[in-house]
Image (tube, helix red, strand yellow):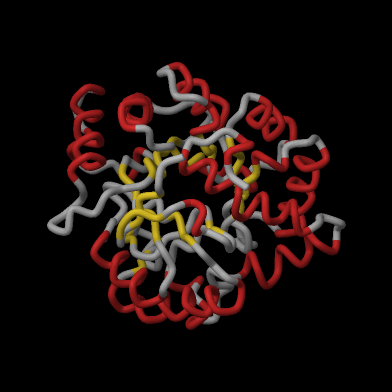
Amino acid sequence: MHDIRTVTGPLSPAAVRGPVLAHEHLALDLRRDGEREAVLDGRHADAVTAELAELREVFGLALVIEPTCRGMGRDVAALARISAASGVPVVAATGWYYEPFHPSEVDGAGVEELTGTLVREITEGIGPGRVLPGVIGEVGSHGDRPSEPEARTLTAAARAAVATGLSVVTHAQLGRGGPAQLALLAAEGLPPHRICIGHQDLLDDPAVHRDLAEQGAYVAFDTVGKESYRSDATRLRLLLALLAAGHADRALLSCDISRHGYLRDEGGQGYGHLFRSFLPRLRAAGVDDDVIDLMTRRNPLRFLTGSRTEEVA
């Protein structure tokens, strides 16, 4: 099993003994008309760092997967500073988000050109510091089928993943379109166990979750605490249904902090909502600590390293 690429260097999966946040943003800029709060920048770095350091101390937080990619205000230098100061390793990403956030470089670019861009970042590094991304994502679509530009960027992500060995995490807007994403990515030869379909806790459809898991993909319940989109009570019901169907080995959990108002420093739920609120509710519902360790540690490590189920203890 290969090492995990973090913003501060390679990390052995065996060294990750605590929980992993599978989908969080530490530095991003998604501001558009009506979305002026969707930013985490230098003004918020100290608050982000303090939260991560506290979670490492209190809950043993051992790794954060940070899928901010091209066109999302990615700042790998900021990630490296936050990681070093908090003591929490961070995985950076490459790829393209969904169409409203595509930079102009996507316009008219063919799949081969887009694939080359991703492979260069994966092999040569991002920015002056040559930070190596450890995952491809969050590559996005909206609606039940990807748009034409989204199909190109998703196909490029799949081909870059096949070429480099990295795994792919998706953005399925409001939980929709996961089956089409999986079909497109798998058609390029990417094994489903190296694909995580994002934001499935925003889709109240247990049958879709089961189908994705049965095909071998990871199913992300990664917006925990975002009550304005979906209640945690509904998330709990949907996750328990997936567990009851026998797919605990395909669930990934996180909070997707994506605007500064979600930070604890500003009165929000923070990166620790999963640990402070949601996991206790899971335990109260009868989910034992081994299953929680599976979902919060072993599964994300298997996903990142492309390992089969039995390869991470």
